Length: 270
Image (cartoon, rainbow, N blue to C red; front, side, top):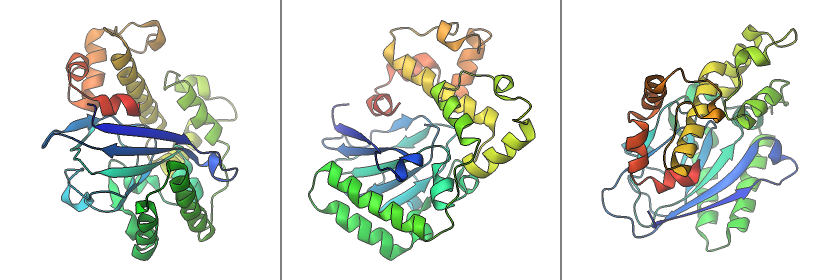
């Protein structure tokens, strides 16, 4: 899949870096007509701006727009790349969408909403028009960060929660950590579940499963053959059937089928 150009820029803004991880640019040129690609859940919410062609990139007609706000996904999503499509994704930290903008990720689980419904049509149109001006990616990040800061000032921004660090640990460990390891006298399961429902949008257990699946996908691309008892998985899979069943739950495919397909875009994302 040589028709996709992907550029990622880390967030370095002193204020926003507590909420935003990366800005990801995807531009398509020469994409074959009608080809679809399955993308894995990434473990974080995203606000996307489409500054190129508005096409049926997402198969849902109601998602054909200039900007989408996408919540935590718990299964693969199918997209249809087309030449001329250009998009910028604001890759939040798992808790960043709520902590910065006060948007409940629970409402966006396995779902997306038109960003204009959250921020106003005029605001989104102004950002998209600025992004359409020929300029370097770094300048486009500046435009995006200006939008984020203005939106953050207009709502009651949430302060960083003590459980944010637990989420960071889960991400750092790629989901390969047991809840029992995290829980102690200061961290109660019920409180952690309440935090996840409000800040992340899915349960702690489901979040860990998403992160593990993302890591399996990454390993699947990197290795010629992936084993369920790979030392990295540290006994999280009982046997091959458990490994295959877990993978298929997210992707509707067996690991070997996913590896055989041409999913270069997914490989770049994970």
